[in-house]
Amino acid sequence: MITKKIIKSIIFSGLSFFMVAAHANDALLKSTELTSPQQALFSINNHRETVQFSRAMTDTDFSKKSQTQPVKTESQEYWFRVSGNDLKQGVTLDTSGVEALIRISPKSMHDPRLPVAKQSAPSTNLAIDLEQLEITTPSGKVTKGIEAMSFHANSKQLETTPFEKGTSAFKIDKAYATGRYQLKTSQSIPDKQEYLIYVLDKNSPYKLNMTLDNQQLFSGQNMSAKIELKKSGITTNLESVSGNIVSPGGKVYPINLTASKSGAFKFEEPLDMPFANRAGLWEMRVVSETQGGSSTIKRNSKLAFAFQPKTARVNKKSKQASPSKAGLTNAVNISVSHAGRYEVTGVLYIVDRDGTAKSIAEARTAKWIEQGSDKVELLFQKSLLPALKRGQKFKVGNIGLNDQSRMSRLQ
Image 1 (spheres, rainbow, N blue to C red):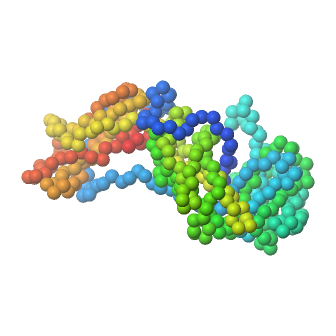
Image 2: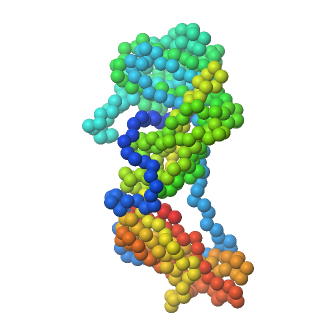
Image 3: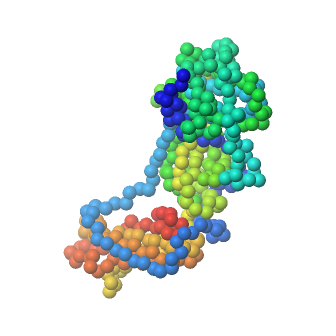
C-alpha cells in the first residue's frame, strides 16, 4: 500500500521537470546594443511629468555591487516523450543508481487552432495501468511490472498531486541491478497519444551541473553557461549535449554548445530576442548523454533567467557635478530606442586629495524621453552639500538607469 510519505517523496522528487520541445523557427543569437525601434514594446507607465529627488546618504563607503549573480543547479534526472504505440512496442530507460523513480504522464494533444486556455487536458482513462506493465530488467529477465517495483502509485492515488492528470509512478526495487530496462504495456491505448516518461536516478553517482554566470540578461548582452557531468564530484567526459532557450510563451530556440578540454560544454554568445516585448522569465534547457561503464548516463537540466529588452543606454557621462543655484547638477546622456519614461540615478561623493571617496547623497530623476538622444539632469540639493575642505572635490558615480514604462532595470 502506498503511504502519504511515499506520495510526498514522489511529489518533491519531481516538481522540477519540464517538457523539452524539439522545434524552432526564429533567430535567437545576434549581437545588438539596443532593441530595434521597429519592435512594439509593452508599456505600463506613460506619465510625462519630470520628477527629481535627492536624499542624504549615511554610508561611509558605498560601492556599487555587481548585478552579475551566478546561479547553479544539479540534476540526477531526465525525461523524454514517447507515443502510445512506442509503449506497446516497448521503450527503454537507463539507470546508474538503484531504486530509480519513474513517472509516466499522458500529455495533452496540442491543437494549433486553439489558444492555450482551450487546449484539452488528458483524461484519466489514458493513464498507464501499472498492473498491465511488463518490465525487462538489465539481466534480460521479463517480469510482471509490479514484481520489480518496491512501491507504485496509480493515477487515482496521485490525483491530488501537482502532476498531470493520469500520472502513474513507481520505484524500481533495489534487488534489481542498474542498467537498461524496457517498459512495455499490454494496455489498449491510442497509438498517437503522447506520454512523458520521467526518471529520477537519485542514488546514481552522476550529476549534471549547469551554471549561468548571470541570471539577469538584456538584449545584446553575453549569456554564459557551463554544463558538466560529475561522477562522485569529479568532472567526467560528456559525449552528447544539446540545448535550447525557451520563451515564457513556450517557443523553443536551439543554441550551440561547445566542448571544452575538461569534458564540459560551454555556451557564450550575445542574445537578441526581437520577439520579446516585455521583461520575463526564460529558461535554458539541456539534454545530455554519455557512456558510464556498462550504463548509459542520461541527464536533463534547466535554469531560469530574466531577459529584458534593452530600450536605452547611458552614453558618455560627466563625473564632475556642476554648481547651480539649487545645488549641484550632473547631466547624463541617454540614447533611447523606444519612447518612454526613464529614471536615472546617481551617487554624489566627496573625494579627498588621496583619492578616498565618501558617499554623501543620492539623486534620482525620472522623465519622458522620445526615441533618440537626450540629457537627464541629476540634482543634488544645496541643503545636502557640506563645505569642501582643502583638496576635496565632488564626484558623481554609480549611474543607474531604469525603464519605468516597462518596469525594467537597464543599468
